[in-house]
Amino acid sequence: MADIRKVTDHFSVAPQINEDDVDEIAAAGFKTIVANRPDGEGGVDQPRMGAIRTRAEQLGLTFVALPFSGAPTPEIIERTQSILSEAPAPVLAYCRTGTRSVTAWALTHGGQGMGEEIVEAAAGAGYDLSSIQGLL
Image (cartoon, rainbow, N blue to C red):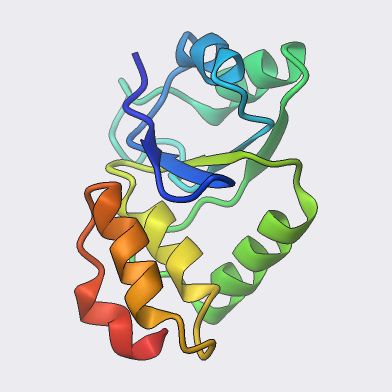
């Protein structure tokens, strides 16, 4: 069962999912899945994006691969912003723990003066982004 953590009405995150979780994700009303975890990062037992993509597309969901390691780069932030503005919502993004995905989402709001609101939304989903509040 996927550990889905709602950040906003349009965006949620989860630790690593597998293809069996996709049915639950679709039933929960998600329209898009964003994969932020590179294949193989967790070794040979990590579920692969291909199987997750296949199941998502069988169920009519949009699947976007945007894997990255470490802190999101300006390019990743820009691509995340583009995905979130164009993809059908609600969106579920996943990585190893969800932190990478929620951080990329938060940084799409950089310079908008929404630091406190963004940090609170992330905290409500179980993520402490207080260290980047100044960037938001």
